[in-house]
Image 1 (cartoon, rainbow, N blue to C red):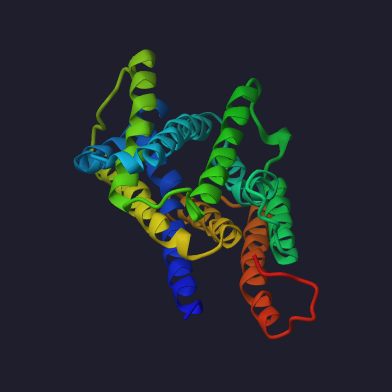
Image 2 (image 1 turned 135 degrees about the vertical axis):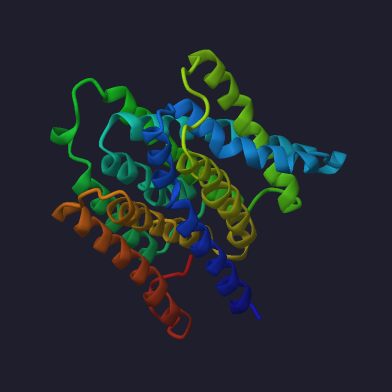
Length: 300
């Protein structure tokens, strides 16, 4: 009875990870259209926010949770802008690998803040993800004067890690549509003022590819995976959700290589292999523990 919801929930998280991994692909297409990070960040959330605005109405009992979700959206909007700004100013593979260190931060934040003691397998998997990211984040490959961009990029995995931990077991369960309405409103409340303040020279893409990319980053890479994650995360454990999210990195790098013609060097390929290994360890080695209670490892 308990295993079936966990499997279904994990499948939804895996699907969400795949779609989330397409974010850098659509963002880079829009950058090539001449759009800046502030407009690309805004496009990622404004269409979902318009759609889910119909579900903002919240019963009084759920308003504290709606406020917490709104705050998560505000902080997430700031971090996504930092991530897209980094994609625009430093090598894409470096920004992607920094962003996808969030499974490591998730395990640590879950342990330190949410008092969720990670299993030995979770720590090993997180360590592999950290090693994978460190292989490709090499200071000598970074252009001069991009320290702010790198620091802003690291804000994103910290925020995503916190979201993964909280949304895996929120303080109050509210309807998915209501939660999506408040979190996307939080995104727009910070991204719209940023876009107005920067005063971008170009707002709309010039080509059909650009218009398709706007729809892609808003729906395929934002709204759909957000719903999938919110549906699946509470049915699985937080550490497994975070580590499964590492799959996004593989999708992001492969999409760049196959669809955008970006070169993957030996270290980046090694990083992807380590991440797949981390996922394999988490999913395979944790299963026998239920049958062998004498083993001194606990499932998270």
